[in-house]
Amino acid sequence: MAAECPQPLAAAASPARDSAPGERLPAALVRLLAVCCGVSVANVYYAQPLLDAVARDFGIHPMAVGGVITATQVGCAIALLFVVALGDRVNRKRLLCGQLALLALALLGVASAPTPLWLLAGMGAIGLLGTAMTQGLIAYAATLARPAERGRVVGAVQGGVVIGLLLARTLAGAVTDLAGWRAVYVTSCVLSVVMLALLCKALPPARVPPAAMGYGALLRSMFTLLATERVLQVRGTIGLLMFAAFSVFWSALVLPLSAPPHALSHTAIGAFGLVGVAGALAAARAGHLADRGLGQRTTGIALACLLVSWVPIACAVHTLWALALGIILLDLGGQAVHVVNQSMIFSIRPEAHSRLVGCYMLFYAVGSGLGAMASTVVYGLAGWPGVCALGLGLSLAALLFWAATLRAMPAQRA
Image 1 (cartoon, helix red, strand yellow):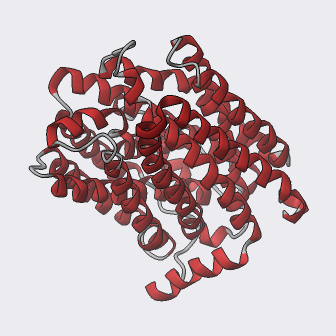
Image 2 (cartoon, rainbow, N blue to C red):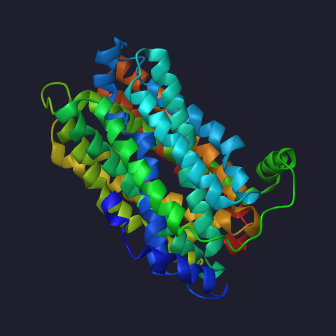
């Protein structure tokens, strides 16, 4: 992914500095933000197809190894509560570059982890810094975009995020088979250093001035947003249920595929992430529909896709073709919901984009962490059918909640 970054970066940055607020955001800058978001978010997902290798290396029981993912999500939650909001208060470029330098150090720490405790601490740091980088870049893109194109821009950048997290599994599996799971984090450290050089050179200043409030007031305002903004509450809950279903699937997938009768390698298992790219790219179009006022209709169709996806996914132990179809539907539905969620939430308060994305992604962190922990436990108790039943139940809950809250949402958000 890093190879895509050397676009005409100076050209990407310059128009953003010189253009008037009403001009269209340059495509080169949108591509740069999308690629860098993908590189950043991949760090949070590298561990998912590696859980069996990590469990063997450290002697962790398969039912408990999901804690590695949970530690990452704890770091994500800390970032969303205490770090992401800083983008509304301080120089965004300095903040992002500083976070990226620390992320490179955290990746080296995980690569050299001597004990499970050191591993968990390092995974928490990766979750914190990788999340802060990714969400900071998304909020930055939303701030630069005009209101009429915000859904399109957010969809494009979010498309980079999704491709990054899907390719993360493929890269992690391939590198693990070649050089072991620790080499995955060494490789990611190198990519982060390259990205640091690119962003330090190309990031333009944000158009919205920093908020004139102290750090404490900034954090308190996040709780105010959570308590008072109906759109944030509703779309965040839908996101929580959707991300929990996502995490249930991806955290447990390596367990049945690495066992007989499939007994696939990490490279083959990680390659299933490539299958979801088709769905993710299609989901990026959901931003255009949200710009046209069709966000709610798009949400209903996307949640229906998410629900139906579990039928072919349940057949994974018998046929991998059915699994591939299920992954396409899962990623198409889930990511379309995610794009529409962000488009609606960013329309609330333009001066608080960093705080809004931090609040919204708290729902994500809770859903992903609980889903990862529950999936490995359920797999140990009920196998793959139990995992699919859990994912189906979460997807159904999301669809029913969306339907029940349609009237509670402001009409202009529909």
